[in-house]
Amino acid sequence: MITIVKDYRDNDQLRSSFNELAKATFGLDFEPWYQYGFWTDCYNPYSVLLDGKIVANVSVNQTDMIIDGERRKLYQLGTVMTGEAYRNRGYIRAIMAEIEKDIADADGVYLFANDSVLEFYPKFGFVRGTEHIYTKAITQDGECTMERVRMDGPAGWIRLRMAMENSKFETACTMADNPGLIFFYAAQFMQDCVYHDRRLDAWAIAEMEDGVLTLHNIFAPAGVTLGDVIAAFGEEVKRVTLGFAPKDAAGFDCAQYHEEDCTFFVRGTAFDDFAAKKLRIPSLSHA
Image 1 (tube, rainbow, N blue to C red):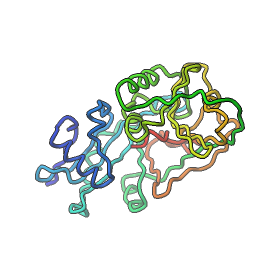
Image 2 (image 1 turned 180 degrees about the vertical axis):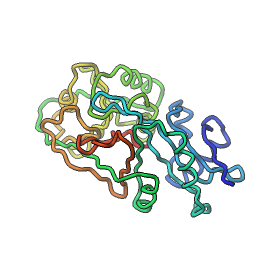
Image 3 (image 1 turned 45 degrees about the vertical axis):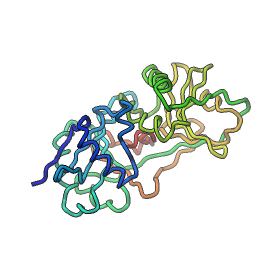
Image 4 (image 1 turned 90 degrees about the vertical axis):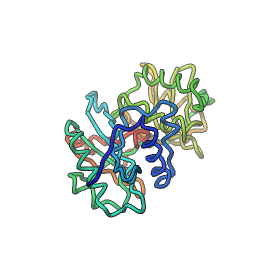
């Protein structure tokens, strides 16, 4: 009989075993995220436990989205992994069956699958979804007024968290009430990618390379526009790529988006017109 455990975030032994599997599979360690206090109830691993060891897992992430002003209850499945010695035993299928019982209230469920499992998820009612990406060529003058804010400790985290809570900046598809997932990136892999403009009191999580500004998230007061934030990065910006679908797409080029070895699967009414509205899951909402 397969034993499936969940809701074990605060169990040191099980969490450690989960982390060992995640490190072996993806090179990821969730322990700092937990110790920083960013691992919340929104992220829940469902794992097969064998002889006291986590050997397979699918995590459920509650990632509700505000789409065209309406909150939709969404779940994202991720961190799908099985220890090398435990594969081909039906563990992931068993976990998926257990998850189905707990997410029946969803407006939509989605995941990002690698190319080796494209035939697996349709067995659970998933179909391939379509995302869109927005880009724009830029010619602008002026100095960069965005200042980098280090995310290597509580001082920066508290400021960014307050900006998230007070933000009035809207996109066409915005994740709601899950700052922990954004901090999974901002407090670890993207510590040098958080910016603040004092004049606008606008925050951005962004990357700049060879004149291309990739904007992942914006947190700003009412009245601050996407154009204001782009302008604050100064004359070095020659092109902008958005990690979200903008509320106003005027002037942006829009194209279907697909990452290599990463297929978007969806299920549920929330995705009925997702492609038609040319939306995307925000880039830092991927688990």
